[in-house]
Length: 404
Image (cartoon, rainbow, N blue to C red; front, side):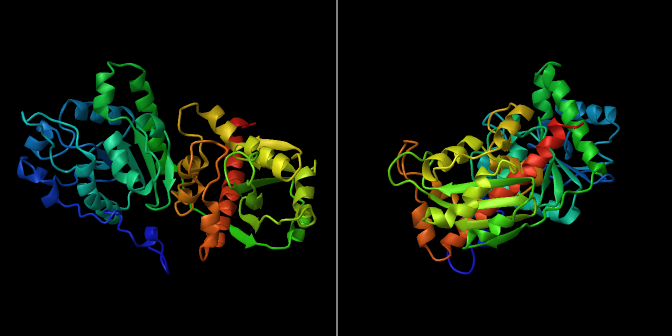
């Protein structure tokens, strides 16, 4: 949808693609003993635990975590000083038991999870938990996938983070499902799982990290950049492709963040004279430079602006990899979500930054975006937010890498 509202602003949380998801269309309730299993627990510590789906034992007894994996979860919570049923509220990503043709337990399908999502969102809205523990892939899919427009990935990518989710205003803490830990036969998965749960419980004592919208100044004359005297800046480019060398490539816009709460953003001027305040900033050896994957900004500056950036001090992508070597976690979009709880802020621009071909030298569709009404403003906002989040992320990474 285009006009006064974006597609994201008008879509339903429970059915973002416009499809109808309901108990009737799912049909699991017709076959199980305890259909639409209700939340269970006294919720004294305001922890919501989301599992996968009821198994045979849970379905027969009408409440969650009654089987072998449930007993492991209960004993582990007890070991960490938490009562699963007194201190928590317990639900599953799917509220009815999924069964195969032989009446054995099976994993729920994504469609079945989507049919239950509306109920899960209503429970979160009603109870307003301080911490949500997501146990396994189904729980992650339930709460994150419909808002995450890229490949979701698996539990190994998401476990261990304490995410200050700004949509739900709560800490979201994914970790392994107890059935997976049980199958590991007391391997390293058990140790990791216990540490993840301990970390989740510790978030109860942490104040929730509220998002602060940065001030964004769209400028045309770059003279204002000459007034920047901050010891460091983060800067970010939006360009016509991945690599700057092929004919026709150029830097479309740039954002400079002199702090974690402010950014200047501008369409890149066509003449070197108009760019001079920005170029002077890039070559100033007294001002440190921060970027996400700094070789990208360095190469584009060198090739398209004929300028070599001086005094690089931090690369947020490299630091993400040093802090955590798991695959799939170093992108700025992922880091902004797990560190600051802001999800999918690049949604409107992402399709335009993909090229038509497979070569890194191909031109993308960014020109089509800026030719649309309001397209320049959308692109510049994304660029400004990138720069601000790079600045914020650098500060947070330093706290973890350089604690003394």
